[in-house]
Amino acid sequence: MSQHPTSVWLKNPLGIYTGSDADASGGIVVEGSVVREVIPAGGAPTVPVDEVVDASRHVIIPGLINTHHHFYQTLTRAWRPVVSAELFPWLKGLYGVWAGLTPRDLELATTAALAELLLSGCTTAADHHYLFPNGLEDAIDVQVDVVKKLGMRATLTRGSMSLGEEDGGLPPQSTVQDADTILADSERLIAAHHERGDGAFVQIALAPCSPFSVTTGVMRDTAALAERLDVRLHTHLAETLDEEDFCREMFGLRTVDYLESVGWLSDRTWLAHGIHFDDAEIARLGAAGTAVSHCATSNMRLASGIARAIELEQAGAPVGLGVDGSASNDGSNMIQEVRQALYLQRLRYGAAAVTPERALGWATAGSARALGRTDIGILAPGKQADLAMFTLDELRFSGSHDPVAALLLCGAERADRVMVGGTWRVLDGQITGLDVPQLIAHHSEAARSLLARHS
Image (cartoon, rainbow, N blue to C red; front, side, top):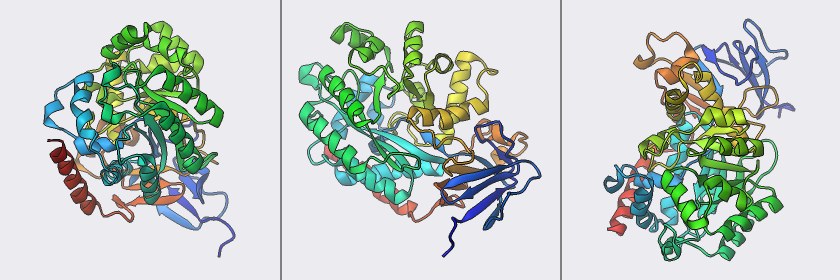
């Protein structure tokens, strides 16, 4: 057996975005699970390599990082009763359906979401799972198994809902848990599954769902637990004006004031959506280093608004991207999400301020910062070898000139190759070891059965 890791030179790509200013037009060398070196134009590796891959048909980018999702929602895409609803009525319509989820449903939904993400060039995904009805108490354990089978990285959040309809919250009582159950299971999951340090594949974060579905006590206790065990915090915040009104009526506070009151205004936290902040709140979030996951497609789908991404970033708040749940997107395609973020943010800031490279930066290094990671999101020596390779052979790209810009402007949908930690997980547009037609059949049947049980 070789005494050194296998090395491969991805040589002379058609285009490359590394996330840094280094000239990498000669490609990159991967050794084992990390990037060993980037090669300038006309250059060659400084030491011999075991394999050379001709990348002259490919555009190479860091693996995309999805910072907000609800995998289970792939079972309720485009459900007619809520197709044209905004957030609160959309949730009220769907909570009763989701209350019927089974472990097998979640396994299939998670597999479908991760497979779709992987095929779109995504190598790391965060999921926000907050539904634990009877029989689904081990939901996060189910997700860990799927992540390991597909060989992706994931930050799986132990979500929670404790404020049911009877107490003035939004979710039905059948979907809420008491604080002791939530906190005990959170601690169990961290001990069982959370990996630390560079190259981690599975990490656990704690994620009470939203101000309108958990008590202040659960928010405070979760923050304290996250600090004690050194894990990250995640929640929905400032997604809609309805939520702002709820916080004023329920707590007498605006959303960021509420966040601070429960101990969450810190660089341990990343927030989903973060749309309705005023100037002072943006400054406070930036000063605290609190990150925001911008979910452009979902925000358009539910007519929630446009996040102030550039102002947040300039204030010091890391900005990443998320596809959000597949019942408010209704897909899990990360390269398309980058395109949507590019265009939506141009509506707010103009074309010159939001370049393709800036949007890709949100989806890579920005998303990595939101998840508290420094080992992914950039193609540079010593960083994890997570990358996606796209071809520009389809009709949609014919006549394009800038290969990196073409990924977004011409609408790339599917990666040709995807590598996670130095291992190919997608080759020739196919996920290694996964029967996708069979997955579609089983997942579609589970979706039909879930709705049949609800009706």
